[in-house]
Image (cartoon, rainbow, N blue to C red; front, top):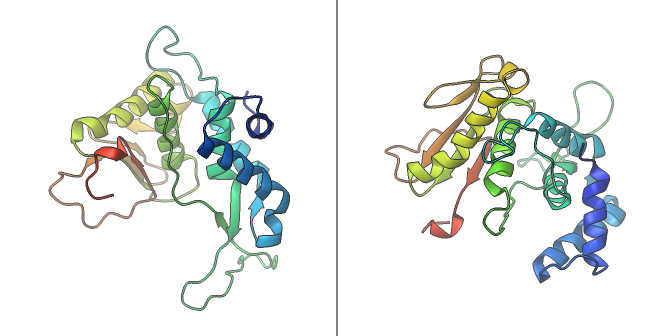
Length: 229
């Protein structure tokens, strides 16, 4: 099973030159390591339980194509690095109107913590499980992130393109009936979780009406093809 330490080790190896990587990857790894070491001085905290939570979720996410179809996904170290970056770092929630830190209502005197990163850009070559990783994130945000009424969308310039991540996610639920199938149901239009009133749908920029969406997570495929990004 993937561990947070796998992602940290990946960053260390990239910075040390043991893994060949481009400039932006090296910079991302260096920032990650710097934030682990010095982040608390700037109000940035790394929550290992939060980071490990999504890694644990992937234990139940199966491959849906090829010879490994139906078998659990084994996250590579760079997959782990991406996930713990997005889901591990947290900051105190600040009231936008007053500028004050929002405190928890349990009397603990501690602030409400929210994810530091709201947007993540992931660019990888073909055949590197990009859609698979994205589909798993979509399912996690739909039914395992603790958000009631979560609206999750896979978006692209056309509905057919938007359905790629969605269909992979749906097939994950189909192939993992004893695990993911206990969390989700699905039909042609959506993956949904009745208990939390959450849903995961494909959405294209050519849809008739994009108003009224209360988006918890959006997975945007082929970003370069979007004219207004």
